[in-house]
Image (tube, rainbow, N blue to C red; front, side, top):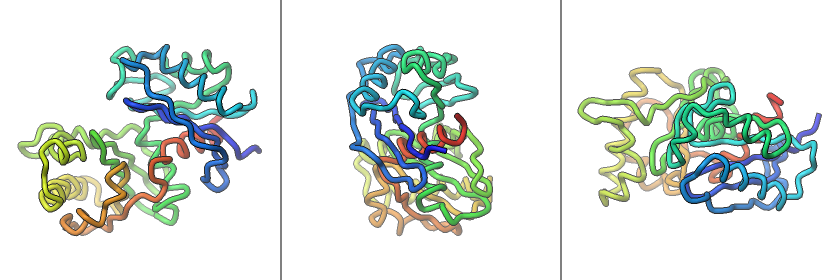
Length: 250
């Protein structure tokens, strides 16, 4: 069975792609990036994905996994974050398969990042309940039970106490826009993680997203009972996880 697959990570500002050796989780090509078309409309995004495949000179039989900032069920995108609302309740899997002229496996972006971490990164030796949180403009999440993904959790949208939509209170975007100190942000994240502890009694938290690079600055202010570690696959996580899921399911 081939272990080389393509991972494509669709974001609100950029679409990234690379070949991935799914036996190791390492990139097998240069990582390419093209800005997300204005408005993030489905047809334009699909065309950009095709351009990335062309630039990578991907063989016609290569498996392709795509992750998008949306809840995904059976190839249907059910929501949209930082892309067009036309993705909502849309057969994104069918569009991408048609435009890319091959079967495509579609997955939520935070779930893809979680799969990368659980397979090749900080969660590779984990057991029990693991929760990954990606800290960016919003808060993405991925839940695993004995390394099996429970898809489409949206823990960043939990209402906690007086905080409506916790990501507007504790995301990296909120940290930047409100010009918080690392301690202030860490205490807000503590509120978030403590609530998840109450709900799930997890064995491990993994923190990803761009903020994970500076985890030493805010982790000391998150005082919780569950071990918390930074992600290891960094900003290639979505690409790696999408490719791994393509090999598993296509």
